[in-house]
View 1 (tube, rainbow over the protein chains, first blue to last red):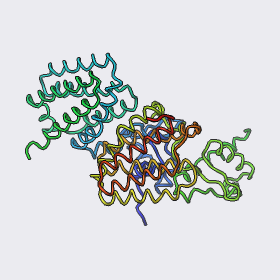
View 2: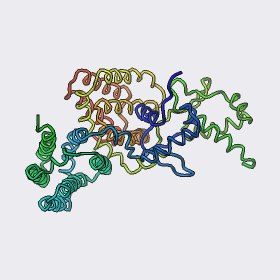
View 3: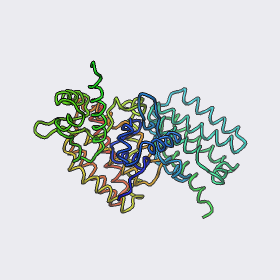
View 4: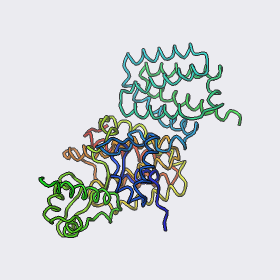
Length: 216
Length: 227
């Protein structure tokens, strides 16, 4: 007898095959139970677990929906390096859009975030200042898909265990160069120089990643 | 609907169709009207009228002489809860063009042999999706998802899932504006074939370029603009 997949694996498979998309309604319970070869009782247990993890939302009368931002298995399968790699693939390219879409209001916001960075003393304050600066950049794209992508990365950043790796990023010396890089990115954006902003963002994130390997 | 029976029939058929919609491409045929009428204890006319309604809703497709088939369970715009609804087609296309070529480039270096086999398998499946647009879109989405999975980065997979959640809404817009549609299935297939070849050849730049070419052609078809 072949092993029937559990609900979580089933959802993952359906996502891979393009038959199920984030935000889409799941089939009725009876159909799912039949498909998974389990009782509806067992199925309800699995649904409750996924709901608790925020992967599905259930509304009486409307059915069960896959969450629009489905954390998938990210929380248990991600790592500091995965987040940074994703940011390196994403944020430099994003600067091309920000350079042409940012408003004067956005430039003022960048300035306020940079000032917050100067004032930041503790690791927590520096981390917060870093986060709000990158958030302000993403908001400068004025694109709802960018907002969703950024929210996802921020959520991962905050939910991961960073431990010593996290402290290392925000030491006095590393934070000083981080702030310089932030400023140079904001400068390029203000000049609406997309290529330079993108290149500086890439260098900035690669520098952070280099710190991961500082002992090698 | 005095007795409430038709709505019961509808519910039973709804479950049957939902189940069939998840099945493999060649297993989506529904039982004949007579068998369904017997199963649900109603007349064939009642089954037929319910099926006509499901057909109008795009849940089944009926072919004279071949039977009735459940349409593949790829989301239709009205079924998308909150994912697609907040996204405009142009916002999705912009982000897709920014991000997905990078994802393809990463995949060229991160893919294992089994990822490459999986991509080849995806390509081969294109032969089976000559049928409905829904099937073709599900196939397209599966290619994007498999490329993302080949990066072995859960963040990137989750980000591409966000784009995918809007992708068949794009298909819907594209069909609605048939007048500007220039993209053909053959073109999409060629782009994906080049993409897989580039990943197999560990060619970052070619992977990024074929993905960018694909996204541009979709964008042209959806938005009717050249850039």
